[in-house]
Structure formats: C-alpha cells, structure tokens
Length: 339
Image (cartoon, rainbow, N blue to C red; front, top):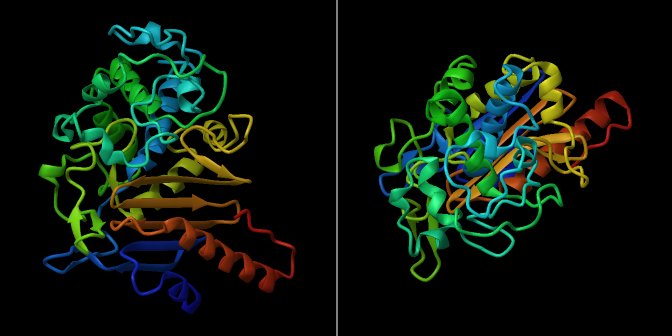
C-alpha cells in the first residue's frame, strides 16, 4: 500500500503489521536487528516492548479472578507475604490495575525523564525478578491515598506480578507462558534476560548525539522484564493476543470487555489498556524501544514496533487515518476515526 509506505519513511527501524477482518493487508520489516553486523529485522523478529507487558499481566490477573483465586477487591496486605512498611495494606487489585493505588512509583514518569536514571546507583543487572525492584520503592511513602486519583504507576504492575506469583506459586512469566502465550500460539513471546537472549531477537539502540553513533540499551533497562513490562514479542504474536482476547479465549468476552472499557474517571484507561475514545490500545516506551498496537471495533489491527525508539505513535495515528478515509470512501458513511 503506497499510502502506508509514505507514512513510514526511509528511517524507520522495526516492523509494521496491519490486518483487516483477520486478513493481513500490510506487513513489512525495516532496518536492522543488529546494526554493526547489518542483520536485518524480519517480520518474525522478537522485539522488546517495555510497558506493553502490562496488558499481559492484566490478562493474567483477570484470569485468576475468573478462577476465583482473587477478586478485584482483594487487598495486597492479605496476599503478599513481605513487610509493606509505609505502603497501605488496603490497596486493592483493582486500584493496581487502573493506576489509582497511590503506591510509591519506582519510576515516576511525572518527575523522571529517562528510565536509565534508575541505574545510576542501582545496577540494572541485579533486576532479574520482580522482587529485585523492591529496594527501589519499599521504603518510600505513599504518593496519595488509595483510590484518590489516576496516575500511571509502574510499581503497581510490579506488585501485580508479585500477586500472580504469590497466588500461583510460580514466577509470573512462567504463569503467563502457560496461561496465555502457549495457548494463544505466541511462540515468539517471553521474558528474556538481556545477556541470554534467544534467537531472532532485535537489539535495541539509543542514539548518542554527541558522538553521532548508536549504542545498545543493555545498561539502560532491567536485565529481565518484570510485571511492569519488558516482554519480547513479535508482530504476529501481538495479533494472536488480540484475537484470542477478543474471542474470549484468554478470559471471557465479558471480562475482556471490562478490561477494554474505562475504569477511571478520565476514561483513558481500562485494565492494562489505554483508551482513545473507544479505541483500545497498549503501548510501551523504554530507551531504544517503542511499541503501540490497537484493535478497533471495525476489525482493524495495527502493530508498530521499533528497536530505535522511533515515533510509533505518529505512524500509528496516520495509519488509522488512512483506513478511516478508505472507509468513508468505500461505504459513503460518516465513519469517524478515534485518533
């Protein structure tokens, strides 16, 4: 599609996948997974996705709720087996899911600009499990009272990962593999240690403006992902996730609808998913990493992943506008994009 190629431009590095009503209409890889060795990205390359993993964790939590292992009103003080110190024991699972818990955020994006700042005094190679992040927030006071307001919070999803582990007795990523990734056929998805990456993974690169060169992000992010994010996945696996979620094959259709419906007063967030009007999407951004994927109510799936931290949000918006214009032209209706 010429319109899509124009949107992407010549400098994009990553994969773009688009389907309509389950049929692929555009899928293409750009740039390199390994810059120095000029190893190209492929459409089945595994990319880091940063906070996009929150959608997977939310699905796992809702699955445990459907299995009567938890409830939205379960309090962390009744679940977790370590000292919460000044953190309120009355924080609920729901408040963690919709970012209204007030739990101290180890990476508060309202005051910190770069995720890499976390590792100045705390080596990132120590972080290979969700519990490894405890020292970054466990001694901090609450940000506000539980339920008081919405504020995006990474610690909340680290704690949800710990809740999964406490309830199931296995590491959260193992539970995700058994409960979601394997049943959905997401064979290219998992939480990998950066110094033990499997085949077909893209390195993520950060541009050094002073030296005008790229370097990898291995010292800028967690050595292994946690409940807050860090999953590697492929564009095809992302589509599989959407398909199985919407068909009610991960959780029931009713529960999936709840996850994709507004759960905060601002109406911009559900459980693990952002909302732009009625358009649900999940996204992630880390040094050298950017990801966004949506599935609208008219059968349009879009996934844009970059391992250079490219502006996937602008590309995504323009792709949706192209299809909205096509819809207007072909059906003569007043179809209106939500982007």
